[in-house]
Length: 102
Image 1 (cartoon, one colour):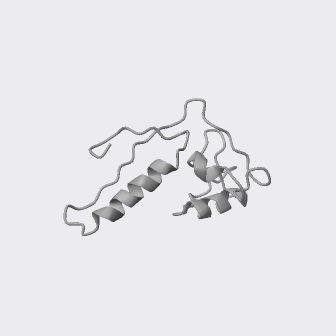
Image 2 (tube, helix red, strand yellow):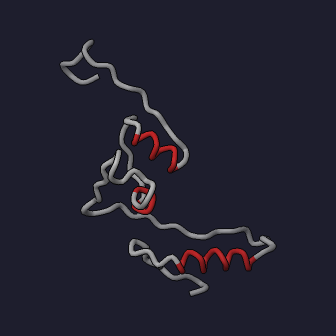
């Protein structure tokens, strides 16, 4: 409860979604706000101009992701195909750190 608002305001319980599409629908229907990757928040069909407002961070959060698989994975060519597909996207917001195969 907010100080000085005792008895006047009820806090809403958190509502969660597990997929980006579900979360976008929840925001568009007025259920709250969220932080999404830019690629998930913009583009056609993502309510960009009709139901939601998108504000970019002046200093955006960052994260590092990596491909990982067990040593005994029987299809290393599939991993390489995924790696090449990711590299082919050429997104401005992606910076490659390199690795053993680069």
